[in-house]
Image (cartoon, rainbow, N blue to C red; front, top):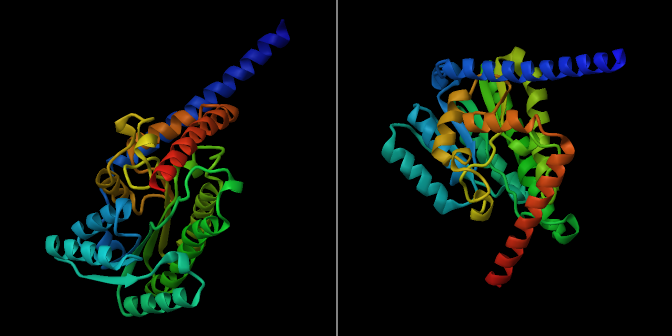
Length: 318
C-alpha cells in the first residue's frame, strides 16, 4: 500500500512538473508577444535578402519587410515571378529591390556556381543586415521512399539543405565585417512538434537539419553581433499544401501567408527559435502532451490518405 502511494506521489509530481513547464513556455511566449517589434532597418541594416520570394510565405514576408522600410534582394528561380514581386514592392513601398535568378536545385553545379557569383556581386557594397532563408520544396509529396524517384528526393536535399547552407555562407562574411545582422531560417512544425513524419521522410529530415544548423549558428555567431533564428511554421495556406490536407484542420490553425508573415517578421530578433503564429504555438503545446506512438499511428494514417488522394490527382492529370 505504501509503495502504491509513493508511486502515485511521484507520478503526480512528474505530471505537475510537466504542466508547469508547459505553462511557463506559454507565459514566456505571451510576454514576447507584448514586446514591441524591433526596428529591423536600424538594428541590422538597410537591406534584406529573401530566398523563394515569389509565392506563399516568402512573398508575404518580402512585402512585410518592404512595408517596414527595408530594401530587398529577391533570390528565386522564376524570372517572370521575380519581376512581378519586384514591381509590386516598388509600386507600393518606397524601397529599392534587386533580383537574382537562381534555381536552387542547381546548387553545386556550374549553373549554380554562376548564380552564386551573380548573387555575391549583387550584394557587394550593400548594407545587408537580414537574410530570410525561405526557399524549400516538399514534392513529390506523400510517398513511400521506394515509390519516389531518387532525383526528386535529391532535389529536396539540394534546395532545403545545400542551397540554404550556401546562401548563408555567402552572406555571413558581410555581416561579420559589419558586426551586426540576423539570419532567419524557415524550418517546419514537423521538425519541432512531431516525433516522425512518415511518407515525407526526406523533407522532414531536411527541416530538422535547418533547426540544428540554426541553433548551432546562433551560439557560434552571437558574440559577433549576429542573431540567428529558426522559425517553425505549422500549416500555412500556400501551394505547398493541398485542399485535402487543409480540410483536416480548423481554419484558425491554417493562417494566410499574409497573417503568418506579420507574425514572423514581428518575431525577428527575439530568440534563437520561434513559433511565430499564436495558434501554431497552441498546437505545439498540445502535441507535446501526446505519446509518441499515438503521433506515429495518427500521422501515418493521415499521410496514407494523402498518398491515395495524390495518386488519384496524378492519374487524372495524365
